[in-house]
Image (cartoon, rainbow, N blue to C red; front, side, top):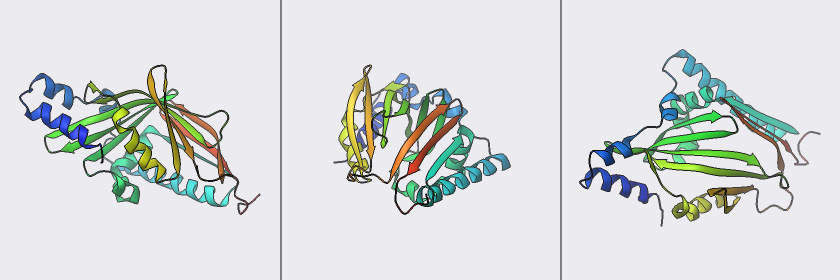
Length: 225
């Protein structure tokens, strides 16, 4: 059974179950980063979205036809894309209906991700503060440490969603392993898990203030040398 009902139940009970006032304020709280990451409407936002899309298309072409590839974007570019063009993509159609208004903030060696969950007056901002890095001994693996996870201003654990997350990622041929690092839930994502010889390697992953960068190499013999 899908576990995303848990957030809906929590929001509904606290907003409609007589715990108004403080509970309403807790669940409808919007983190500062979420508010700050919304690009203002206008030609600059449109241009930033188009630049993100251009870089994404270039990445897809490079991973197919080039030996090496890289991708870089800014906080402004990816959030502009979420507003202007993301909803037109096939990836957006995979998201649950109640998930919308995605926003990301890149910080030094970490990131914050948030999205609205719910409909009408019954909704909250689900946010995650995370760190990400490449595994040292496995060039096809990314590790994500979830420093915090909140619904509004209310922390909640991710353990109840482990299997659902793993199921979704396995369908994309990504092997998932959970463990705890410094008390935080941490997930190991191994790409192309069913292949003895993967077709690509990650070479570098870097998150800086306002910027994201990833670089890799294609190992497919069909790629130009």
